[in-house]
Length: 204
Image (cartoon, rainbow, N blue to C red; front, side, top):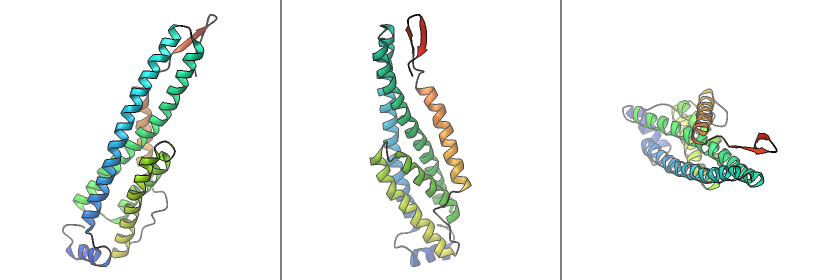
């Protein structure tokens, strides 16, 4: 679509945007990759912070300081909730980047880009409360994808709704959520238990 179909490419270029579609895809993909790198750093920092608090929790348990252990355990639980959102977002956006690379390389049509826009919008919303700075940056990506879907649809006569869920978008989000759940279990050790008056119970 963007390399070999000259007439359609020219139609899109002349009627819609001063920038070639391939350039717009490249710029959008680059913006996504920047936010992916930030998510990866954030995930690493959260894991390191959790490890430090986990060690303190474990030390408090060994000293039979149950109240202090519970405080550390609660902090760990909060960090793990954020880490899960971060990992979920990371895996979902990685899939979007791969699909955009495929669209740029092989040339696909608007309806195949629309699910990616939906995924980015969902990720942006989920990050808004835990990583608002990344969420704000994803607004630009969301808008770029929306514009490209609408522009291609107008140029080809195949309009596509960008504001409704799609099966492909749902599948990407579900797979990312499942993978994030698995990674959280692998990366973060189970919180220790505390013993009080001859009984053993979880801290949370």
